[in-house]
Image 1 (spheres, one colour):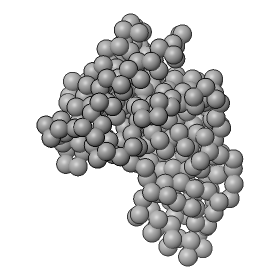
Image 2: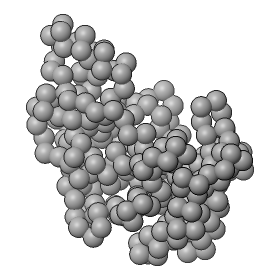
Image 3: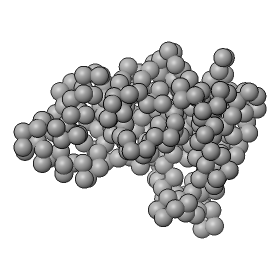
Length: 268
């Protein structure tokens, strides 16, 4: 299957230029609503997804599309990920909370998947215009330059985003002699930017518990093609683009460091 990376990138940039950036720091009250308590959606999310759903399916007529907002509204189902046709998985604005508050850390994420297999992925930073791309077996690229994930190192030298509760748990474990404490930074509020930093080696690891395909498919492929390792914490199975509940996803520089981090995070 021939994938037109340049055309997909152009469509994502067009969505950003026409539907997202004109609303950045310009959102009206009626353009922001809650899907659930604390989970907001903006007019930029909705309109960008509508645009990408149509144009990406027009680009590949045999394909289907699955957007975060369509699933939220009940007009699309995660079941289509089981279809034989390739599926465009769309997160029109990753980091909606940041976007709605006028913070710079947000992105557009698109992946092309088939029956859980991630074939290609794109992450666009609308403000800078930077695009990160990956194709299965084709490496990871940022603005046309190949990128590589962080080299393996000792846990105490690794840096990654952690939540406050996990930090307290780890500090307790380290005091009890269960391992070393990694360096940590706050979560960005935008997994897309975290995945870019994981793929280019700025971050060593990350741990996720909300495993919706639009949040992770593009980023997982980018990190894998950059040389990193990831897996579901309970069985070390690779992430697939399906609905996954009751699991956590751990990203690491290598399988060896993944195992050491997973042991530490499980408290064993």
